[in-house]
Image 1 (tube, helix red, strand yellow):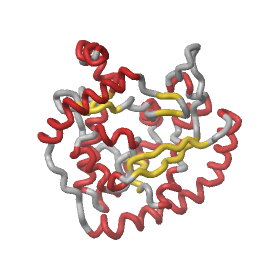
Image 2 (cartoon, rainbow, N blue to C red):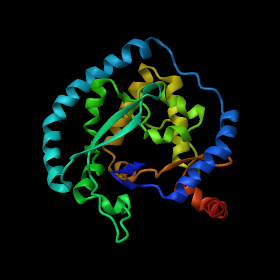
Image 3 (cartoon, helix red, strand yellow):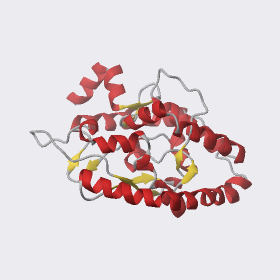
Image 4 (spheres, rainbow, N blue to C red):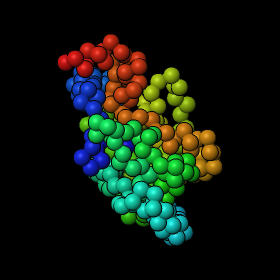
Length: 269
């Protein structure tokens, strides 16, 4: 799920901006003080081998998918017009931003008041098809060839998320972001999926090795052919807003649902 702006349209309301600021100002320092320190893996594989394997896989994958991307580009042009690419700054290795490029799958339709419609309403039929099969992700092989991304690594998040994240979770940027960082930690299904994914990413940063990457590549193939998983992933997790008072990474919608009285109080400030 993207966040921020498209053109002159803000995708986050003023009230939601208040909540993001509230969580950052009231909870972030406490989360940082209570979070465990992260110790990224620093071994021969991380230093010298991982990048070589990325190129070994990424270059052929980019060349093989290039004709398909040309076709998808033409289809996108007739579906949503120009530009055919969606570009957004994402958090790269060491927190350095890079530009992630995808095929556009949403139009810029607005309601009668000029407010951007929800992503679900703006996603075209062709866009839903591209998302369901993760075809809009194929351009990421170019990011791997350039060195902005890796085959396996934490998913690259919008740069706007960085100031909301704890120092612990910022360490997920100790490695290059990847196409996917399959979940190996069970997590708690009752809490926000961002919390589960962030902790899984931190586990990866601390344990990355050839054996771990091999296991995750196998899991990635399994995920690729799991239509149900891809459909759920295409829906997105929502907008990461910050941390609630319990230290759990939370989305805007989750906070509104779990703390309705506090949400009304924040809006009223």
